[in-house]
Image (cartoon, rainbow, N blue to C red):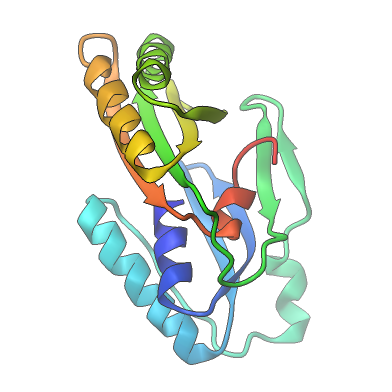
Length: 186
């Protein structure tokens, strides 16, 4: 979500689909004029480098219409993880929310529950979603104004130590509609 947000804010790209794979990872399928897609790829690579996470960013310029069945995946749901594995975006380009979104990802249920309890007790935030990623990885997403979300994410992240492993904690101010469309239950 962090990389997608950076891509959309860098260039006029539109998310078509986000497809989960087994790594765990996500294949983001975007459309826009070539120059915008190239700028978005640069934003993805810079953001991934800053987050110290690997990324493969590839562009297919002018994809063949006859190849669409290979990359246009139908909606799919994984009952094991209780979530869709193919998300089809309904957001439009460059729309942004008027609130912030915070993510706390841990390995271990106890740790994530303690983190979220602390987060919501620290600031006026709302829990939007909980997503199981496999391997004991869980991400909880909260929303509120930027200052509240930052305070809640910091406090919640600090509670994880000793109960599990903090994988990531991040705040996205004014997330794009495509990012919001990837949240479970939306």
